Image 1 (spheres, one colour):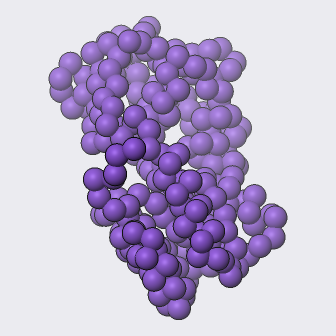
Image 2 (cartoon, helix red, strand yellow):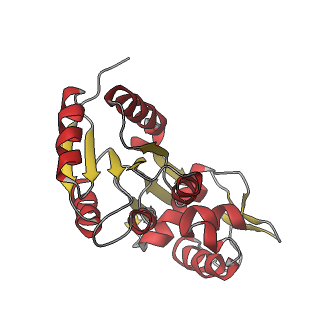
Length: 231
């Protein structure tokens, strides 16, 4: 196994300075670069600017709730998120996982378990997506640069349009149901809002299909969902 090109970066979003100090000591001893934010909005800004490899997120923040931070970041990134919270009830864990968290650990925590869970999360995302450029027809999707081109010219997509394209591309050739897509991109409470999908699928077809009314790549599976086709 080759060594990583750089130490993994962790963004800690937690308002308790003592917890942040403890996490910094634990994580730096484990070989991580640590960045900190003491509030939800600051965490979102730091996340967008620094693009860390993994996020440790508290649910009880002074401005935004941890769930709101999670929902917002899931609109445009699939960075692994570990919830670290004093809330240990099952309903809290379910809500966080449904909102897009990858793992959940309650405070107080053991440093060994925390580092082990982070290693698992990072292994999950060490996929070809990090370096692969996906091509279908005249369309090219560069996952690492988040750039989409058609016939060599860059196509500007909104964050949600890109998220939909990325999701379909990662499951190319497979049917994704309306509910699967809605839960992934809009959260568990949007599973019946199929009009969202119709609007954004129309946008993708308009921007990427040669003939949007007779799509070649973005296929509708009537009453079920959508599928991305193409080599």
